[in-house]
Length: 535
Image (cartoon, rainbow, N blue to C red; front, side, top):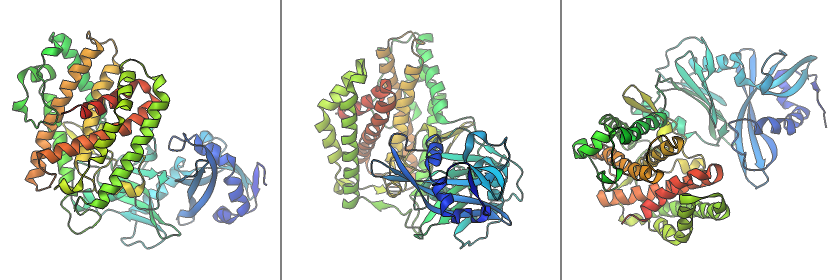
């Protein structure tokens, strides 16, 4: 077994063929490096060992870098794949935090680093995309959109802190997202981005400009990177909504509102703005409801684009059937059992209303389970489409008075195959509704003591506000969907699907909150109970 500093009398271009190098590289040195990265998704599991699944050259003329596909194996008997591009640098002052391995190569001292730290590597990838051949049949494939008009590389910089990928801003005009956790298939973000912007000319998503993929040894087409137009923006809709709700709660005091006198509305009742009572408009303001109508419009337009394809089978609408029902129930019952175990094992960490709701959740587990089993495809007349899959306020950019939808990768816990299953479009709507619910409660939790009302009064007012948000969004969304002949079922079916999908989403959220911030478990628990208690 070699020991550091590692020394090889071999050219960089042949280094990956040397078994001694790969053995040294895949040692605990790489393990220590990977578990420190933000994009590493295995932090809650115990890493067993890393294998080099594939390697390929990312090159231009005489300049060579390696792209590695690493298989990370865990003690719990599962594995994940990650993409890591590597470079060799000899500059002592460079990339001190991102060094993976000290190395002496043909007498030259240096380090193996993540190549994304190198301007030269980023320039090479961008230039390969700019000059991509229309029908690339090589193993490493570069593709560019016909709308990619730049002719040279000017600059690049990291976009900022991300959890699961690494995004680079190119020429202040494009974003290249390098996928870190990868799958043996085309990434849904790539598929959806290209389909929406190139085939359907949907304007409210960052336009597709290019991609990098690798054909692996099993002939699978694996997406490594996606390039899109940079959308100048004012931040995401989550921050926008928190500011809006904070202003609305401050209005309670300013207008001396008795929260228990506020008129309520039935959940899922479709509303146009004239249907919203004057007291609610006076309290919350007209602006937020106009913005919600715009967001609903953009969401509906996305589903219209996704539901109007009749050639590409990956995107053609489908009816509900027995296979989908079996897939759905198996998935949800497994997830529900997992959440039950988490709550049972951690209920002692909860207090007050969270503890009461968690106790009720456990007592009524059979009732909740029955709701999941109640899915009967034979009673549903709507259609299933490819959907966003992980739609929430954090996936929406705000620009002036408009909204742009992004990040079509799907739910992080789902397999790549599950992310491509066609779902009722109301699943996305349910996701954004749960996000509205979160924004209301996050505002209360983050501003403890700011508003001169009890927490219970704020929860009460928040639930009323939330019901109007949903109603106005639904009013615009359903009208536009029906005008474009997308079949999402009649009123009863729509309400059933919304409740079902929101229950699924709240149960999904419960696991995250129990594990990371138990104080917030009250949000999904209230969401679950409001659906279970709804008559």
